[in-house]
Image (cartoon, helix red, strand yellow):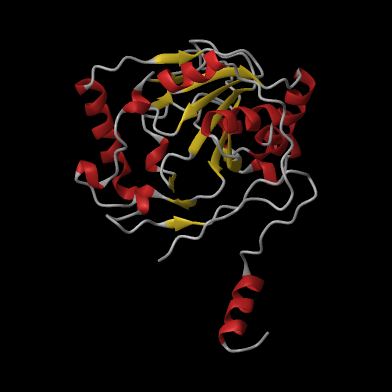
Length: 284
C-alpha cells in the first residue's frame, strides 16, 4: 500500500505570533517537553467542562473514581474543538517542528489516568518520522495528589521502539507486553520521572518519543480534569506503528479537527459504502 500525503485543511487555522523564545525551543530540544499558557480564561474552561461531563460513561455516576476518558468530544462540544485549535498551541508547534501542525484527536479525562509509561510513537507516527506531538492541558489546578502527568525528561532522545523491536507481534492484544518492556527500559536506562503539576489553563507540549504516563492519584475525592490533543504535521504520510509489521506500515487518513465550528463530519456509514460499491460497478 502506498502512503498518501495529506496537504492539510482547505480552511487555514488561525495562529498567534510565534510565542516561544530561543531558550524555550532549546529546552524542548533538550528535555522533550515544554510548558506554556494557552490564554484561555476560567469561564471558557467552565463551559468546556459543563459540555463534556454528560458525555462520560454512565458508570462514572456510580463510581466517580473509575477510569474514564472521552475521545473526540470536539465533534459535539465546540469548546473542546477550540482548545484543540488554540492559536498559541499551533504557533508554538510550528516553531518547534518547522511545519504546520494538524490536530486530529482529542481525549478528555475527569480524573487521573494511572496510565503506564509509553511513547506516543507506538500509537502514531509519520513518514518522514517524528512529525507528531501531544499537548496536555490542565483544566483545573494539578498537583501531586490528583494524578499529574508523569514524564521522563530527555527520553525522547532514545531510539523509537516498535513492537518488533521488543520481539512482539503487532496488534493491541500485545500492548501489555510492550508496556512491560518499557518498564524494563526505564530501569535499564536509570530514568527518573518528573511530574506535570500545572495550573489551570497551562499546557504541556511533549515530543512524540517522550516516555510518559499518568501518576497515581492519591486523593480520590478530587477530580483531575484535563484535555489531550494529538497533532500530526503537514506534508507527511501517517500510520499506526502498533498495527504495523516490518516494512509494512498500517497507514491512516486522519480527519483534521476543523478550524471553525461550521463543519461536516465525513460519512463513514452506509451512504459511503453504497457510493463505493456504485463506483466499482461503474455508476456515478
